[in-house]
Image (cartoon, rainbow, N blue to C red; front, side, top):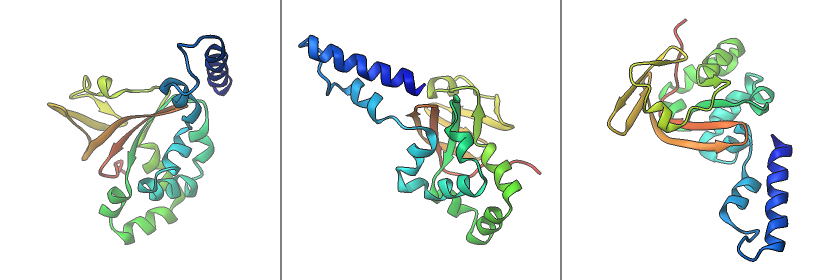
Length: 167
């Protein structure tokens, strides 16, 4: 994937030199150049520092840097705060449970866009019911607050609640 992205970027630069209508600073070229994998995308935003810490604690960094594709329903720091400090500390200390919770937020092998999620009303994602009400989407108890954050190996949909799988 990185070779493909580099090739696309190199081609765009070559075209910009030979054709005045295509410039190297075009938006599409910048997006290819700036796109990062899921982990680095989340790490670049302080709103996901608890999620990034949890991914590191669970030993999932290398997994989420793989080619994918993945769809990640990413809880914000505020979502983690909802479960309470004591429960969060206990979760971070229990690597197996933490891994199970985090993987409940990941769909492996698919990039599910917001448009596709909007067609999933009544279906499930990783055991959590998807509900669509107009332009509002919920997965389990979590509301999707931002959708279609692109990464080189998948897509992120931001959620306001941590998904807790049944034990």
